[in-house]
Image (cartoon, rainbow over all chains, first blue to last red; front, side, top):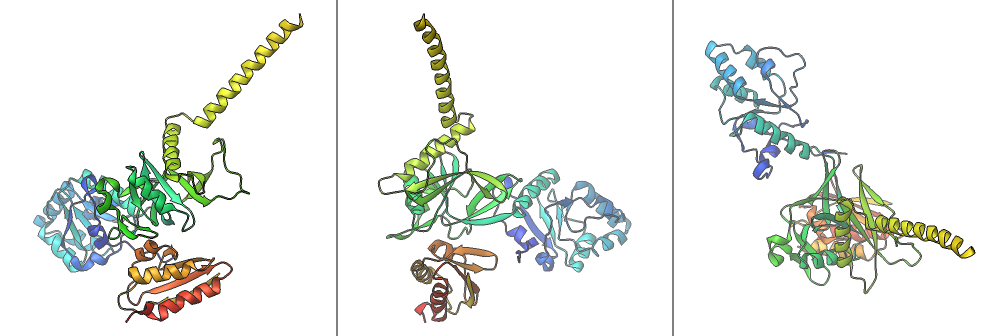
Length: 329
Length: 88
């Protein structure tokens, strides 16, 4: 598959907010902004700057903090530029200088000559490296797109899937009307972050939070229902698969079977919900969400119910034995 | 499964009206129809999906159909692309 490559320019273009903001700006080497970033890792190039290039992780983003920056100033003052010119012979994606301290002029000139971008951030080294890790792990996370609607119901991210025309969007609309939130309609982009968390979001920010409702056309959910009715991203925690009622199919009547769907190697609980006129799907989805929360809190309605029945039957049979003996005497 | 590659010939690309035309056409067939642009594959029976592709003038699109009437479905949708969605 022809994977789209992530460039330094893409890194600068990322729309990140609050605790994810990298506050990066490019100060020189703009010609190299098209360089690819192939790895989510970060390298501190202290050893390389001092002239030791064995196992130098040049393919990573190079982060320069106070210590390295001070060392560069020392090198510049002493006129030792060999190490610096050698470091630029490697195809480094970019350098990031933290603490808002610009590099020594000699380093900037060398970067400009090598077309290697230098980015500057006001954040401290520790902060920028932890933010970069988080951001890059998201960028390089495996992703897939699913045809369905992602809604947040009582804090649970529910992915509604099913054939087109089965009523996914209508169900979502009713859920929004009831105070729940829309994350994405129709095309849900899912990323697997930290190995076991599925983050769902809309595929495209520009046309996000619009829905197509048969008979109405395209509606803007944000404008109609307010910002309280939308969310940018949400973990996919439950899948509700809507399907036409099939009288030959056996549906779960108890709820002790745990069916799951595999998305990017993560197993997500799945419920098959048959759709039939007169069945109020949004309320069923709402109940499913609450039931899922209850399960997360350690209470499994169906299992608990069954346990109670077993206990009851046991005590009944114990009684029967006792009373049976009594009667026989 | 039948596949065909085509190129968008109308200047405006696939905006809302062409997307609606594709959905209407795809909806007439029982087959599963999808459009592919680069790595992204979407269901051709969903308007928002098609618009999300962001397919502009000159973009190469792959039409894929799978089902009993797959050949007719691909032909019908390809015809829409060739006639520039009755625009211009």
